[in-house]
Length: 500
Image 1: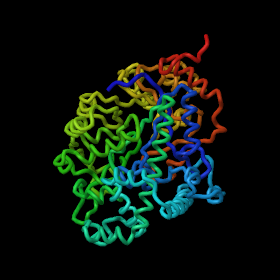
Image 2: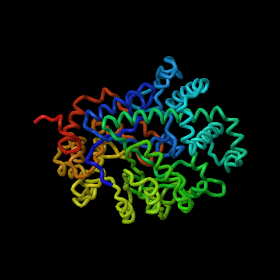
Image 3: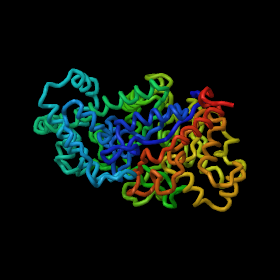
Image 4: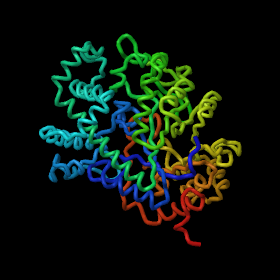
């Protein structure tokens, strides 16, 4: 699928400004949409919207369908009378440039519980009942899972009472009755999340901004779907992962990356016509306008690591579902706006799968300058049906990358871009924008010229990342003006605001 020539910004909502310790779907998100429009951008790329997992990663979600309740705008709940002004006073420990997840989680969850109690004490609006009915296929299992997980202090679900672990119907009914209020709390939170997100997305779409979402190929073991659909995952007799996901040694790590997610039992998925995956894609495409599928190569072949192995070194390549999965999705949902994250060890079968369905792949400028002119990440080697990034959430900022680059990389990038290196972040933005790639995405950190301490993630490091935030005092009028001019002259937005 070919996309219109366009440009956008990579920024997860947690990185937005806001009074309550992390970004959310509140006023700053709407202001950011306005800023995108003023800068000539028509795309807002985000990370997965699901609940965060170990290390606060949005790629280790507790559900493939539910949203991250920490993104709920608490101020909007006050407008309904479910919170009061005193309860919205920010905690003195909140930081404007970093998310303290422990503090944010306690503060926000306490207020969500207050709001839920007041909501449940009144007559529920009709749209709440409609939401619960429309989403029951995943919402009931999710809400019960979260209630049970809290009840068991987030002990792995396989260690719960055996009848609950194996989902005995009577045991589940008894648990749902005894934990009724807690189950309703989680349903209330999801209703708030979806209601607020759809309002924000509608606002963005009305201003010409499309949302580029992100769907992780894997989910966390401690998740509602692994518990609810155990037959779809490779588990041992104790209901623990027999093998786990990751990637072999690569650019990022000499020992590879052992992600630890359970792997799919693909024959079981195929037997049900890939219904679970179709439902997952349907849910995601209802939330965003374009879907980036993370670790696309895993659908052609994935790295299987024995669960007993501490690193990813001793794994093996196993065949994925390949075209069968995407044919089933296309038959059920039609041709979808999908971006394939085709980074890492890419073999001919991965490229063939991507091209069979005409999916644009990704090119990263930070990977372009380690070799010679044949490097596929250099702009002169792009195909049109491509999405180019200076860097992704897994990369350093442009300035941080340049400072740590080898002498060869620094010399090559400066010669290639005609840069003296003083504004390497803008040189990379310029290169991405003027390339033939249909879509160019710029991390906000690079627009603002930020250093390594503002990178979003460092692959293989389980702690201390996903925390970066910006503040509006870092954003000057010239940032939008310069970005607009670059975008306009390269045909990625209208030139009507330029004067010659």
